Image (cartoon, rainbow, N blue to C red; front, side, top):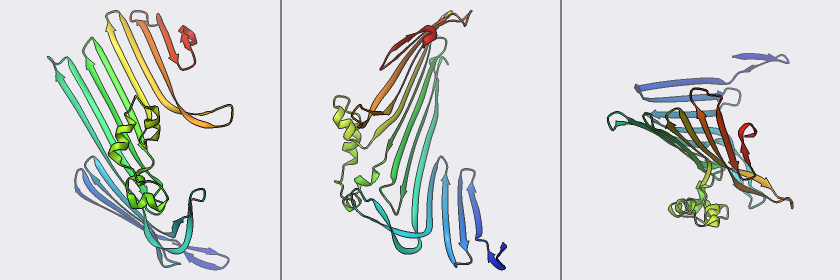
Amino acid sequence: GLNEANDEWTFDPFSASITLRFADQYSNTTSLLYDIEDEEVDFLRTGFSLGTGSVDFEARTTENAEFGGPGVGWQDGDERRLRPYSASAGYRLARELGPFWRNRVVGSIDANVGVSSNLIRYTESSLQLGLSATLVVHKFLALGLSVSSSNDQMYVYVPSLAEGVGREPRNIALDLLQSFNFFSRSAREESGFNVNQIRFSLLHDLGDWDLTLGYAGAPELITATDGTRSFEWQGELSINVQWRPIGELSTDVNINSDEILFGADS
């Protein structure tokens, strides 16, 4: 493309994309953006789809970056060229379970993991974990659970990267175990693995009645009276009893860290 501005003609960047499919679930897509005026590649991305997994790589024409120390952070350099910019990978596992016990029990499980990193400012890296599961017993019980967790400090598990920004290297296995240490709050806070949200539901069939229990919890940033800010776990438990023939006939109870609410107030 060509554009005229102030009696001068300029070229639009040239873009191209190609997709290769090897099978129903395997493919590669590569995209390119080339600046004709500056005669340089601005952007290059290639991604592979491997069934339920994926891998992506991106390169950009940009400056390098140097870490200026705590309180300063990353600073742009002056060497501009095409360089690796980011990389990411993900995988998902989904399975249907059952039926079991004379076709009365079924379930499902869905787990996913994703990791991404800025290859120039490598402290901008993260790991995302998710898990959801269901279990249904015909005319008796239905259970649901979902958990999501993240880690925004993946670079500390690589000694050379951690030392490059003045951090002590950490052991990923020990860090993961500390995140499950329910007997020590300080150990959980020290761990780089943080739970983002937990949801649990239970529906019990009582014939003409349904009993529903639910719990939802997530960390919330709280500001204290002295101005300091910290994350506190906020959870809410809900209980509902409902009569099936008349759905409006029900009782609700919600319990959180501040109060207990009954009926319409909940």
